Length: 327
Image (cartoon, rainbow, N blue to C red):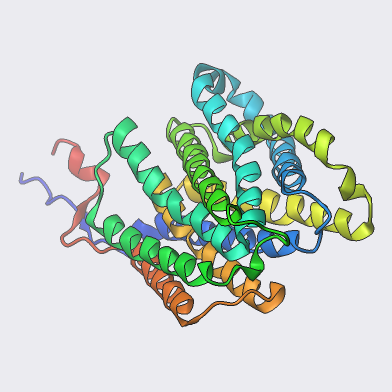
């Protein structure tokens, strides 16, 4: 009796359903993150260190609060990989301090563009060196287009420093750019650490709760030392509450879901959309100027997002599990 011909199924949208949703989660998180620089301008009397500490500090603690059960369930796995957890937590604590200081010194648009624009390259290098993962042609195309667009945004805005802090000096913008590069590196590091932990089978809620919870606790001394102005007015307090609850808490819940479905280098590249949101809000709300060159950069970033989010189609059938069984 002749064995039945093994069943095959064509590649459908379902095969890429997970990565598509992952990309959409990261994009949604990036839109929320893009509002942080503009929101911070509504509390001018609060230092960038206090803004970063309250945003990521309380946001991280809330991440841990909703993930107590999965963290307890997977505590053995998290303890076994404590070095990765610690690296991610340290990067979480350093990122907001560098990021908000960068925006304070160089302006909302430039600070955001440098911080987020440098992250995809840092993330890809980390994956290449540590995980030995090659650069894919699709990622290279999307990253080159996106980072080039981010560079155009930065160059276009550099000649219009009115978005920087009042009383800024000639070293403010270079210092802000340097801090932006540090922010990009730490963003790449905690994204890589979280993705690596998720890949070992630990749920994204447990990973985000552990990494961001510890990082949030590390920021509490900074908040205690710098956070008094947050209580000086209801407006300052509202800004702090918004930053902690919406872009940081809700945004990183979405980001964790995304990291469970896409590579860290893809996630950081997709988050270039944050630069567009930040630049547009800086123009419409803060009053910063964005010339035609900057809008061209925003269009390039949009093009990179299209390249990275559209599901790829692979030719040929994909075998089902039945094909691996003996006839």
